[in-house]
Image (cartoon, rainbow, N blue to C red; front, side, top):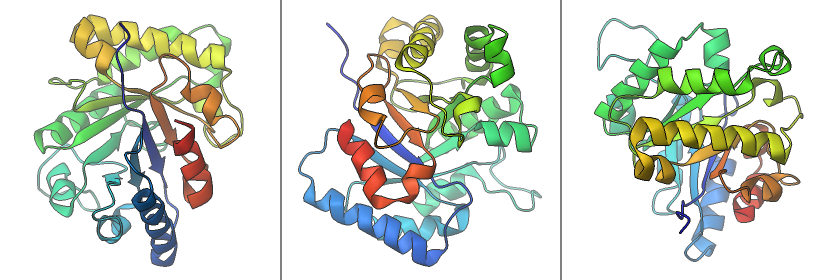
Length: 253
């Protein structure tokens, strides 16, 4: 019997939004969530760090979760500009994203660092979304599955379980470009990730772990992608900045 995994629809706002935008986005989603009886999905928003407290309060009682876009490996210390996982937890966050391709490319983050951040997040009591994905050059060279298996193997934190860890497959060539992996391409990689998770975590935990698709998911393609057998939700970028678009994607789940 196939394992039932509750879809996670996560919005990564990236470096977008002021307080007025957060009020409209978080507040608008909270109103829609309040009208939805027993939604079949879990909804998560990940705003810029200065807006976290604002968003936690804006969605309080709605069932919407709030997460951060990154965290430091240390619990405290001389790390100017960084935020610890324990502080994120204290602020009311339930999740944190680690290893997004923009962090890997813009800040030179390695699999080893991503894993350390994920482990710090788990220690602090947060759930972690570990991002992996290949570049266009790697895909054209036929390295897609190898790259994703290697990133997963090296980035997956010790202590990862289906209840505290989510994997997000984000083909780098599809992030913010409007290009989207075809259903066959997405399912092929998600299936390979699932097999790797089963080998690493055990068959039961690997089968229960959610694997999200990221990379220009929008209202027009969400339903087709979300109904693939190994796609368990989405990590949404641009479309998460619109209440209507983001809710339409969630509703497709």
